[in-house]
Length: 143
Image (cartoon, rainbow, N blue to C red; front, side, top):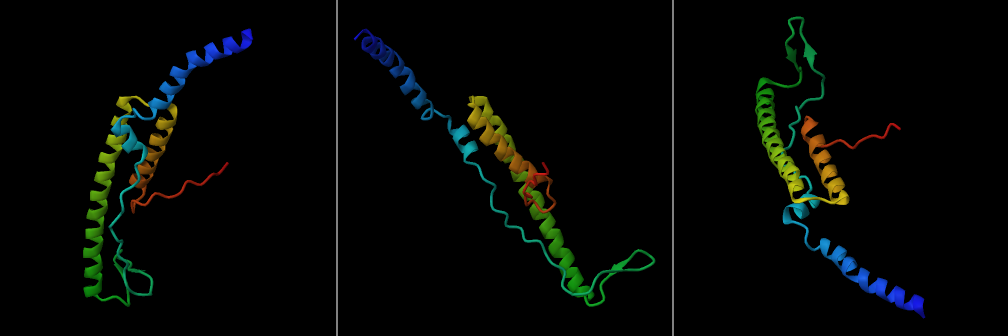
């Protein structure tokens, strides 16, 4: 009977801490919640493709030409590629801003689980920033 009373007292003493632990999930700062739910924004930039089936021919002078592409098509391709490059730069600028917001969310205090989720989101952003076409490549496990 004495054991039942002790267990009952321990249960009463631990009840507030258990409910307090459950309330921690409710009191997560809105910036931390947003950082945990972060996903890369949709990439609207489409990389242009140079028409023609033959390969590039490099002259002894170093000039590159394609036999089956005229200058009009080549000019269109160059302009499209320039637009694509600007679009990618703008997208990467936005990713840098998002990276900073994720980093600043740590100022509100994080648990270990929250920190791991946010760090994985930051790693995804970093992979997109490093990639020339802003599409993160899946990591290959060489181990």
